[in-house]
Each structure stands twice: as structure tokens, then as C-alpha cells.
Image (cartoon, rainbow, N blue to C red; front, side):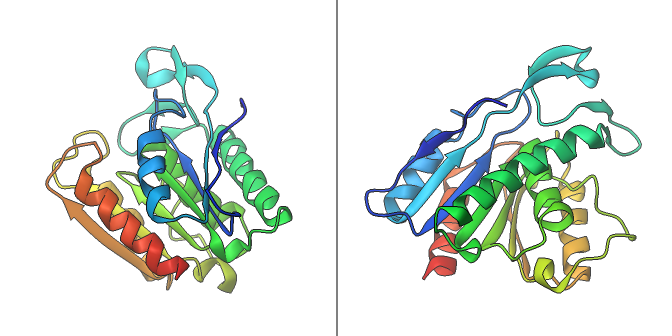
Length: 218
């Protein structure tokens, strides 16, 4: 995986947001969002990783930036879990590097859109043992959440904000709801926000994210 883009804050960093793009996009995709959020969070460092380019089965084997291969869409998404673990461990490494640099893990947030969101949910609740500042799950789903998953007390303490469009025809609203419901069932402090949109990001959503992050970092 190539080097992530890092946006340093105007003052010494005391918080960090690691933000993953979706399938077929790149690390520049959420650069305007990161810049907008950083304007209201002057102490937050933003890290935008880049997914490796590899064949994606559901797209006819065409190579594109992908956090993991999607092999089939039905009945549920069939994915390459080894690649998902690899991407999650990359995120875990970025978290650990920030902790080593002096940012407390409770002030580190991981965010992801669509496929990137699946990676951050998997990272926070199946790969990372500690408590993070929070997870932002945008228009996403959780392919590895099931009834057999058991969270530790430290993992359960990581709050989550799920944001989804009510007209999403790529990652259906019900898939996002299922991830939310699993988290709620496990005792995670999870919130659900829904917007009149498709598989996209809208200004109202960014405002809600800014408010949520500001509250968590107050």
C-alpha cells in the first residue's frame, strides 16, 4: 500500500482522523472533506490512505483501487477476508504509529466510505483491541459482523456514528442498518443518521460529522 496523504493541523496535533476512501476511488477523494473538517478541528491531523490497485471479481476482474476483492453480490457480499484483514491491519498500524507519536488512542478516529467503511468497522471491532475515539461509518456495511462475534469491554467502549442514504442503490440502506443493529446489540454507543440521498456524501452529513467530532474532542 502506498504512503498515505497526511494533513497536518495548524497547531500541534492532539487528535487524529484516519479516513478511507471507497472502491475505485483514491486518497484524494475525501481531501476536500478532510480540509473542511480540519478548519473546525484545528488540533486534528488527517491521514488519507490509498488502497492498492488489484483485480475486483464483481467488476469482471478489472483492476482498481480496492481494500479487498468482492467476489459476489448475492445473497450477501462474498469477499476476500484475508485482504480485508490485511487492510484492517494497515489501519491498525496507522493507529499504533499515532499513539507512538503521542496522540492518545481515545482521540484517534477511523472513518470510511462504502468499502472503506467496512474496513474501519472490521478494524475497530475485530482487529484492534483498544478503545478508539470513535468510528465514522459512511454508506457502508459490515461483512464480518455476525452472531458469533464477541467484543471485549474495551472494544465495546468505542462509539460509532453510522450515516447512510435512504436511496442508496449500491450499499443498500438495510445493509447499513444491519451493521448498526449488531453494534447496538453488542452494547456499543452507536448512532444512526439518514439522509435523502443515494450512494454519496452531502453537505448536511459533513456538518453532522463535524459536530460529532467536535463533541467527542471537547
